[in-house]
Amino acid sequence: MISIVAIFVGKAFVVANDKLLVIGGQQGDFMAIPGSPIFKCVRSEVVYSNVYMLDDGMRWKELPPMPKPDSHIEFALVVAQMAPRGAEP
Image 1 (spheres, rainbow, N blue to C red):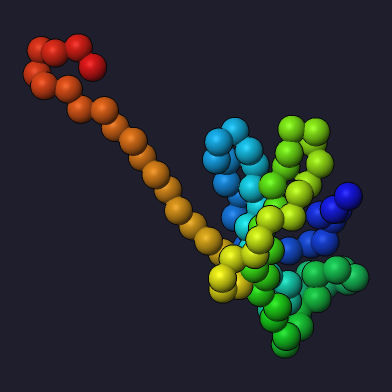
Image 2: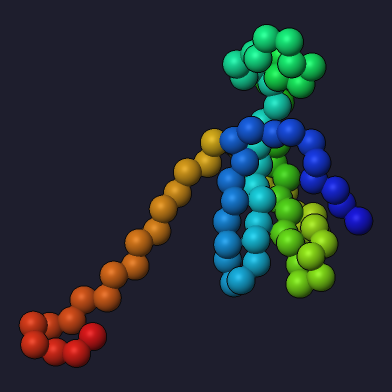
């Protein structure tokens, strides 16, 4: 069983075909929080290509990685149905 408990920033969360996917992310090179053992500013940065899917049994399944590691992935899709004036959509 895969556990996704590591702290990454910049992950993408996507719902496709009624499945939750977690894509990419990075560790390092983020703003330090004074006194925090976790959020320390570091000079290294690791970007991930991992892809995980939450299956029907609420378990994480690792899928094939992205071809290129990436983080801070943003995307929006808007679907609008247009109907001729006076017609039912």
